Length: 467
Image (tube, rainbow, N blue to C red):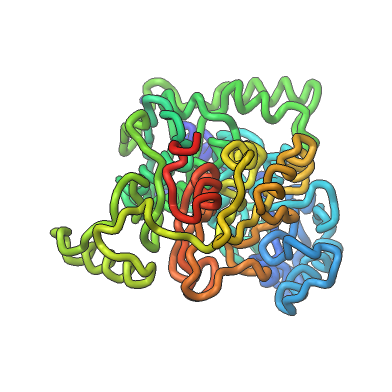
């Protein structure tokens, strides 16, 4: 018998019942809850009279709809106000642990899960949000679910799931100067397409992956969903264990030692067989920027807007034409000549301390161009406090950025942080489809360094010119 992959080990250890044909009832160790996806899920318990099976295995926070400025005032949006109020009512009724909006642990659900130690290797973690794949960076099986599935987890702590095929993506060669993990994942998606990972659980491996910090690994796994995969994973190692040790919800003492003994067995066996394997050389990459309306439509900042008339595949050519029409771009236009109106640094992709440090290093001693409005939104209150302790907020403020409270902010185009029609934004978030950041808004996905460079030059810019 061949060895097992990381994914197979976790799947097998959490299978409650095997229905055959790849279908199984799988136990859920952790469930992250936010205000947008779960009103119907709590209503299911109300309607059926079922109890919450394991309230202590849930962790709730309001993040999508919350404002990132005037935090102490009444939430202006009626819908957002009702969503946050309903979440507070529901968690109180069902005794679910809740991270308060004014608490020192508040933040984006996919930032606070790892920060608190709620996210652990070898576990199965779900949330009503597609970017739950983020948590796979810790060597756990994490994926997004729908509202009805959230209700099922509330009631049973289990879900019926279909086993995915396995794909190993070997990232090799290291990162050149000015290139980050955000550039790597954007370049990979442009190579394999937004459907390249459909049906697969992706495990990222290789020397580039092993050298990444935990924050960078989270960025990598966060965007696995943009390649079509619900699951992105990195095997746990000393980097993982060092990050988790001492976290508030992580095991302690003898429990930590016992957990570590299990966690060290999780990496894929040397003779494990993957259904698909890709090797991607990261040493040749330049900083990336998306030019279209999917992460797949991305290129090196040194390049040009593509010409659909040169594309042999008529369907792909038509998609490019449609994207360029929406984005207001012309074939042959240099990417580094595209002006921006707004800059957003934040989100569950790039709102961590490491991201803020990288952007601040570019901004120090410089100022935002007069035509640009820029905001920096830490991913959590803890990130914000740590950044302020280092004086990073002073760098952002001196450069002309707004320094905001934690939340999803402009990534999701709710909560008042939106683009106006026709405005163009250099964004560190994860999605750039039509209207994502506001009706008619145009989004260019970039790394934090690239966003900072765009802010000070007023256009998409090769950050290497400023380093």
